[in-house]
Length: 211
Image 1: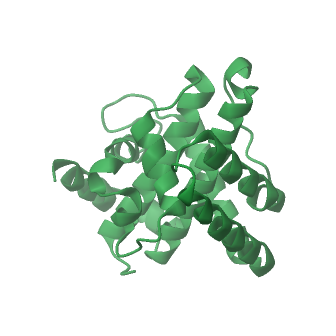
Image 2 (image 1 turned 60 degrees about the horizontal axis):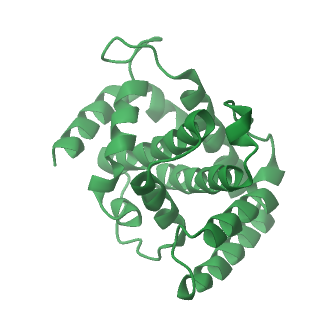
């Protein structure tokens, strides 16, 4: 993958899209179906011709691109003057950290890849977002990435969070978030890029939203 602003923007937007899905489930008990589809697609698809191909095209990342623009504002306020979502930032940073730990743990990384390949074989029987597939992806997250620590503590309505189906979707979205964090690193993303390239990524996100 070419290391450029466009690919980094797409990867970071994908990460924020996964985080947005987690927030939706935690606060309202459901998630936008198209958002969930795009995130799960990134785990199970074998089309890696471009970053956006993993999500079915840039058009499926519009939510993530909007959240990215909102969260990259300077200080505690977004570009539109509204407060940033601190939880969204915390989840995103935690996922970037977990991906870094995963990259340094080849045993866990190998186990993760093997588990995903096994899950891909189930696509002959189930749709990507079938409850059985979501449960399988959630289990993969629990058995691999979650064990790397520290665990990401999700805040929200306990009634929603205690629902087994919701818990599985959250873990599946966190797995997709780690996938997006990997894309970010492959595209040349780093802490310094996140700090000093905010403006250029906001401009790129704006352009992608108009595409």
